[in-house]
Length: 533
Image (cartoon, rainbow, N blue to C red; front, side, top):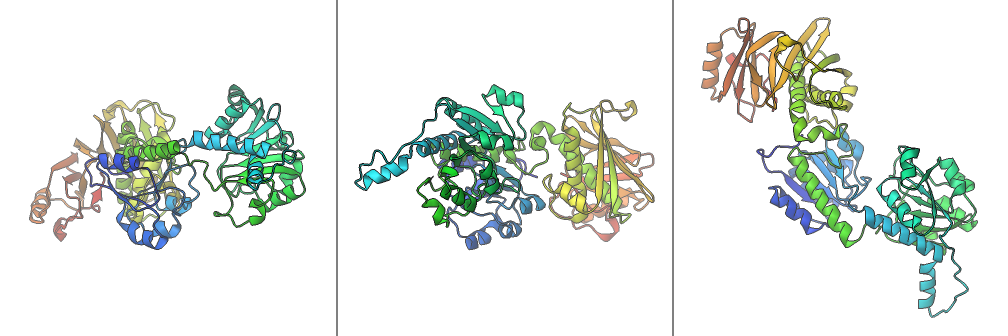
């Protein structure tokens, strides 16, 4: 998880050129910044182990090799749209948050797509080149009007919608495809929503605005060109690889495709010279977002998103978080309660040496949030798997690790807690299997997560789950006085002690020590020392 304001200062490494405002905002918020643009891979591998946050643009490739050596890394920030230069699978497995700025360059990208489309329709680059070669060839460049033509927009996100809005002003009919957009919402923005199979034969121009993934790789291929109108024109400013470039060359050579405007390529810099040198192709070197305004905006937004992340305010732009609102301040008590109980439950279960088990959670009260159950689930797994595996575990990788180790968890949300508990917002977390029955109850008191009971043994005063806890069982450590004397002799700073009823079956010592305390053998806790904060 991100560290809070009172924790140590985080260090950010920026390895691509970025606007000064990003650096200034981070420093103003007490975040240490090292700006080393255009670092070679070998240098990044040497530098990154000392940093918690890495900020890149498009040039730096955050590979598996980089992530694996970044032992302190908690966040990768991509100042721009898309994260295809980041090994997302590896980052997720390592519990590293990956963040981008999806809206920072929307207008610049949309305007570039429109400019490319107009230039394609009127062959402006070719005519310019001809004139500069001292030729006056008016008849050689016969373009086509946009008025009355049909524009097929594949991907109705921010950029796709802005492109359509602008081209509607030229009198174009706009149809679109997006798997998550409803026909009703498409109609409100002037689209007729169609399937891909219906879009291909209807469109005079096709503009692509989708991410590159397994579903969209080579989305435009020989089969698709076979379905398109004769002379269809293609615009791609999103990601290289969405178009099968070999298929595009064949379509251009056969005149099935009347022209292509490309800002992105399967390989950058492009090596397919047959494509980029084709007379019906106009191309730019991935500059769709390269405006002064866009550069400033993505840099500013990247910095603000990092500040919110560090201060537990939001997970804006995080692409691999199962619950995007888990970082908000108002939800932190639920995150902390779930994680802390999960960690303590795992410690109790470890006594039974169980490797596979099922956890049941009943949540009482709480905010009326449709994601509360999922928030509790991933947060509890963070505590459980982090304790079991003794490795960094966050909401990013907790579900994956639990699945791999056959740990299951079920969460039920109930509006009202039983009156005998004496709280309005809390939860029961437990396991009930043969030879292993454990149960924990915790609740939220004045926005602080506290422990109510262990195995129905209720603490006289609830235990704040905010410091390192030493937990003792009467069956293993019957003499409380001996324990307290032993802790003092071991120079353990004791903040408070909490006893459960009846008969002090459990007692908990809280200590503010931030390191594994050196406790004498005779007074070691019944459960391994817990850092639940």
